[in-house]
Amino acid sequence: MNILLIIVAIIAVILLFTGGFVESLNFLLWVGIVLLVIAVIVWLVRMLTGSRRV
Image (spheres, rainbow, N blue to C red):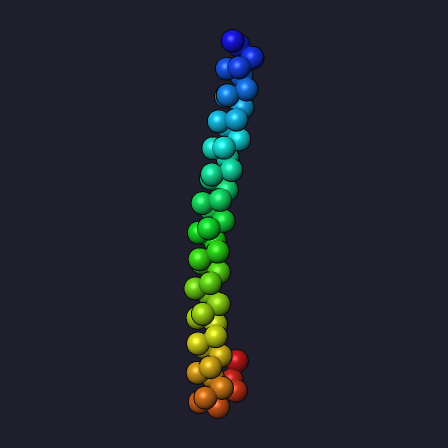
């Protein structure tokens, strides 16, 4: 019975960490997509207005 309890506890901890990593990676993925869209918009505005300043 103790071995089963230890196995269940280990699986629970692994799932807890995996769930946390997936949530953080999902958040970072959305942040990256938003930053990419902002960068594309800024690039398009600079190309259309002809501004070459950095």
